[in-house]
Length: 140
Image 1 (cartoon, helix red, strand yellow):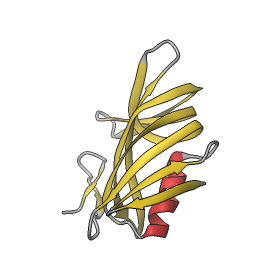
Image 2 (image 1 turned 135 degrees about the vertical axis):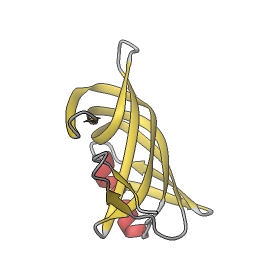
Image 3 (image 1 turned 120 degrees about the vertical axis):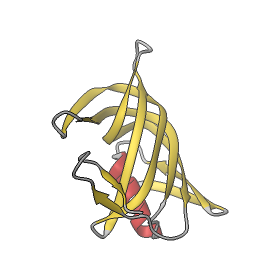
Image 4 (image 1 turned 45 degrees about the horizontal axis):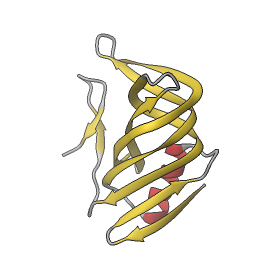
């Protein structure tokens, strides 16, 4: 599913070809006991599902893109919600015509490579659902 190496307090994580990014990262965070942190990376995918929150209706709209794309930027954070790892990921994805799509990354399947840096933070960051916005915000 992934390979990793610890460097200081951070990790380099390489997700295996054909694996799903969010699933692999969630498993990695569970195994390493990471409850707070940040993620950055790049790579390539063959399919990606992006999510958009419509602020007027507070409903999510998901759209799946089935094409080869470059991850020009993947950024996110790690926290906990309902006792489990909670990832909040965003991605910019470059298409073959050099246009870019992006947004909240729900899931994507690697086709090529996915190279990430995971920077854990000490402690735990929790989440709560905010009724006004419909978002899972930090519980500070």
